[in-house]
Image 1 (cartoon, rainbow, N blue to C red):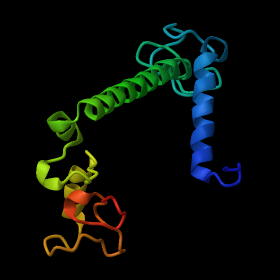
Image 2 (tube, rainbow, N blue to C red; image 1 turned 180 degrees about the vertical axis):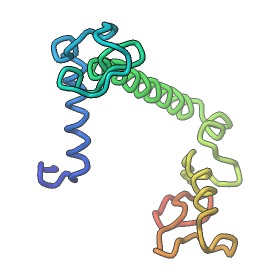
Image 3 (cartoon, rainbow, N blue to C red; image 1 turned 135 degrees about the horizontal axis):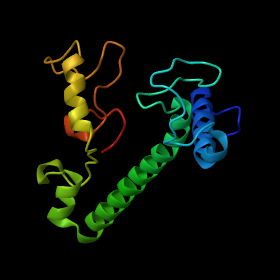
Image 4 (cartoon, rainbow, N blue to C red; image 1 turned 180 degrees about the horizontal axis):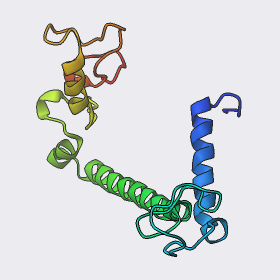
Length: 164
């Protein structure tokens, strides 16, 4: 089990910032100094002790708008996550249950790849993009100067990660 000291610092920073965003979104009516669409000053006022981030082109407080905007940001992120999870689960279960050509189509496998290949959808475009930046591109070498593989899928023949 991972203890709090074994979690990377970057993960802690992301967790804390996400937590602050969620708290701001939940308590926006009580945290924000002004209402979301409330015109409170002249247009384009600079930062001051009254308007910490200034005002926009209509005279609305930018800090209040950002705090209320956290609600929409979290909603969109949650809906995108739910949609991608649902779509992935439905497609994965469908491919597993139906099998055959539909499984090959969804999994982006071709009959020549064999039954045991594990292809990753994003790996081929990623491999093509990395190949363009690879100093050994074109000579059959699939590794960067640092020794990292440019692709970890079985489709390019690189077997370092044992996906076969």
